[in-house]
Amino acid sequence: MRRQKYLSANGMIAYLTFIGAFIPLSTDLYLPAMPEMGNYFSASEFLVGLTLTIFFFVFAVSMILFGPLSDKFGRRPILIFGAAIYTAASFACAVSADIYSLIASRFFQAVGSGALITVETALIKDCFRGRVMSKILAITQALGVIAPMAAPLVGGLLLTFTDWRGSFYRKNGVKPPPLGVGI
Image 1 (cartoon, rainbow, N blue to C red):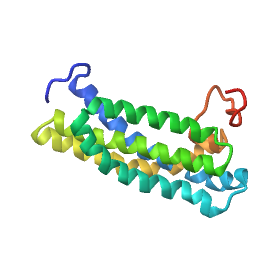
Image 2 (image 1 turned 90 degrees about the vertical axis):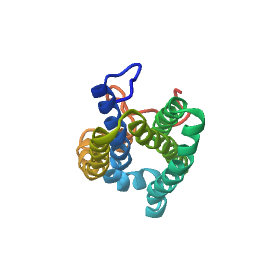
Image 3 (image 1 turned 180 degrees about the horizontal axis):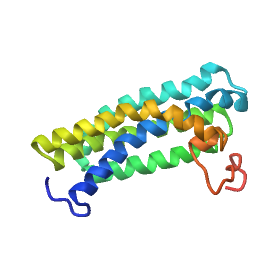
């Protein structure tokens, strides 16, 4: 492993695995709540489904764009940018006042996700070599496949405790206010 300033080898592996699994898990976590979202927003199935379609399209394009950007500007700025955009967009999803705000928020959530996943893969290749790199790539890629399969199950369980907004945000058991109220 190439020397890393803040994390040990195991810490770096755990961090990269977390990034690799967290994005697909949080992407599909809200799938069981989609019918509830349609009722809440009085939106068609098409518009609710568009929240997923937009996400995947923008996510794919973002990965292509952030690869060269992380090579040019460095991994850290792109990682921080991606995490900040993803976090802000997740909060915006939770407080969306209408379906169009949710779609726009999912757009930006996908931009952040694309940056995070691109940097995660690049960091594995930057920090590890040989068989260790192959093993870590295999683990993170496997979790990237397992997480979307587990996410709807977790999302369904989550719906027993919260409404659809809980897939994006939850604070002390209190539902977030409608957009523009108390913010």
